[in-house]
Image (tube, rainbow, N blue to C red; front, side, top):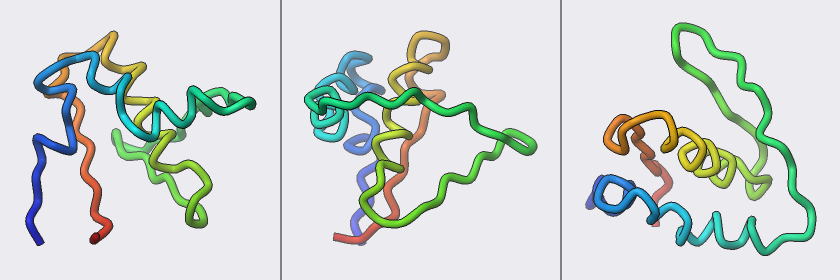
Length: 84
């Protein structure tokens, strides 16, 4: 498996790149908008789970977009473990 961390985290190069992300663009074009839920964390770790295609990835990317206002881009790491 060829892992391309920089490609998975385009905001490292350009903070506004997240706004052009496929999942964010699709979310912005939907009729219904859900608020970002408050995550319960333990020692800085949050587990997001659920069935396929319910919006877990989109939620993570929305969190990244919000957190870019508070953190440096390289402090936010997105890592897709799904093959293909």
